[in-house]
Every structure is written in structure tokens, then in C-alpha cells.
Image 1 (tube, rainbow, N blue to C red):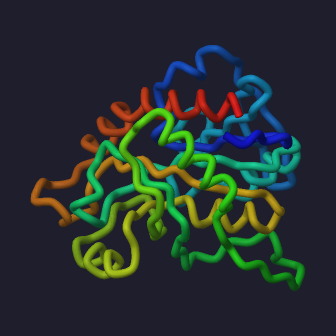
Image 2 (image 1 turned 135 degrees about the horizontal axis):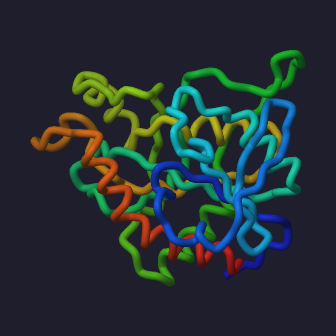
Length: 234
């Protein structure tokens, strides 16, 4: 597995809740031009919970600019993100993982509100290859590529919305496209690992509930903790 010399950062959401790795370190904070960010320092690697220290910030209120600028200020070059998503394909089952190779996100977010600058958003090929190698080593079920579609939370999508976006994407979430865009603007390499925590509304006959999503996220916690352990050893 290739070694990474520059500093790594990790960011996650509901799929980080309750895992034991955070019990081994104290919470820290850093001030950015966009606000205060709380993070954990694990083996010299900063880990940010995008929903805040109390894990209570809803998706549409997350301070993405502060989170990504905190990584930049901490000297991070490579960002590994964990994103909880819904599957838009019956064949992509809850309890598995997907490493997206592209994304769709139409909600504008940028650091360049007062400066004329254009970037072409993308996900890091280098970091995606590393995630693929990790999965081949630990033998967790995963998909090597796929398209992520970002919607605006906090509500889940309607059946009609899912029927529309499933024509263009494989999974749906509420955060990754913004993070990836901002990371590219600050010259950070960013890759996402999506944990499939549920089917999108209407993909399966079972009614989708918040309780089901939370329970699935907790079940994925141990697997995610193992993956984080592999990243810490890069």
C-alpha cells in the first residue's frame, strides 16, 4: 500500500457516532475565519465530526467552510470522508460500502465569494485507490465506483425525487458534494467512503424511517472503526 507523507484528515457524520476510537483521545478546537471547529486528535490525525461536538447539527446547517478550512489550517493535505447514504439500486445493499468516483451537487457553496476563480470539482484518484486497497485487504463488501447525488436536508427525499435521481446516480446523501468542492478550492485531495445505511425512499417495499437509518449507522460503526484504523496506519 502506498505511503502518504503529508498529513491526513478524517471527517464523518452519523456513521462515526458511538465508535470506541474517540474514547481514547480528548476533544480539541480550532478557530477558523468561518467559525470554531471541534475535532479529535488520533495518532496526530485530526478527525472532525461534521455534525458538531454534540452531533446535533442538521445537514443543512453544517458549517462546511469552517470544517474544510480547519483541515487546511491544521496542515492536512489528504481528506478521507465517511458519508452515510441511501442506495438508489436494489443491488447496492445496506450494510455494504461504495467508493464514489464522481458526484452531482447543485447547491452552490464556495470560498470565492469575493474573488473570480473557477475550479473543476473531482474526487482524488490517489485516495480512492488507497481505499480500494484497504477494502481488498480487510475483505469488506464494497463497490469500487459509483455516482453520489447530494440533496438538501434535513428531510429525506420523496419517492418521486428518488425515481428521478436514480436515473443519474447510485447513492444519495446530503453533505459530500459540498465538502469535495470546498476541499478542491483549497487544494486538498478528498475522497469519500459511503456507508450504505438504507435504501432510498421507494427503492424497497419497506417504509423508510429515521430509526432504521440510525440503527444501521450503529451497526456499521465497528466496520468503520476498522477502516479508520487502516487509515491511521498509512
